[in-house]
Length: 308
Image 1 (tube, rainbow, N blue to C red):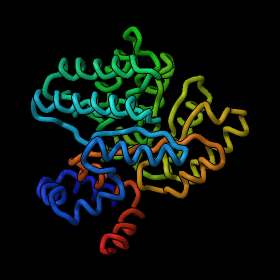
Image 2: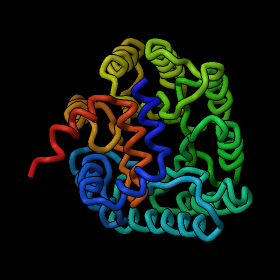
Image 3: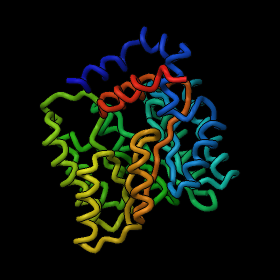
C-alpha cells in the first residue's frame, strides 16, 4: 500500500515541479542523491572508493521528449565516462533507455547507447554500461536491446541489465541472459505492476529473489545482488559459504545514502560492495520510489530534515 502511494507521488507533476525547485526539497534529496553536476558525482564516488566500495553512477532522468534531449543525455554519459577515466574512479555507469530516447526514436536510442558501450569497452581498463530496467511496458524491449548490444563485436562483458524479482517472468529472462553470460543486477522492483504479471506480497517477492539469487550465484558470470534486506544478505552469505562460492565472484549492491552501516560492515568482512550513486536535477521520481521501497527512509527524513 505504501509503495503504491509513493509511486503515485512520483508521477505527480505538480509536486515534482515544487520539490525539484524548493530549498527544502533539495535538502531532503541530499541524503540519497550526490548533487546536480558531474563534479558532485565524482566527489561522492571518490569518497565511496576510499571506503573500499565500487560505484555505479546514474544521471537521473527518463522519458525524454525529443531527440535533442536524448543526445544531451548521451553526451552527459560520455562525459561521465571521461571523468571516470581521468579520475581513475572505481566506477561504471547505469542508464535508462527512455532517457536515451527510446520513446522518441528507437533507432536513435540504439545508436547512442551502442556508442556509449563501445566507448566503455575501449577504455583502459575496460568499463561497463548497466542498462537499467523500467516499468513492465519496457521489459521485453530492454532485454532484446541488451542481447543485441552484447552480441556486437567487442561488447561482451561490457554491458549488462537489471532483472526485477517481483516479475513472474524473471526466471525465464535470467535463463536467456545466462545463456549468453550477460551480467545481471538482481533487484526486487520499484514500479507498481498488476498481479497478473507480478508477485504482490513481500513474502512472495522475497522468496523469488532468493531463488533467482541462488541461480545467479551458481552461474559462472559476475552478477550484482541489489538489496538492503539483511535477511536476504545473510542468506546469500550462508549460501556462498556452503556452496564454496568465491567472495569475489559476485557483489552486493546498495543505494547511496541507505544502510551505510551495513555497506561498511560487508566490506570489513571481505564481501564486495557497489554503491549506486545518482545525480542530476530530476531526482524527485527516483526519491519517491526509494521511499516506497523502504518506509524507514520516510522516518529518517522526518527526523533529520529540520536539523541545522
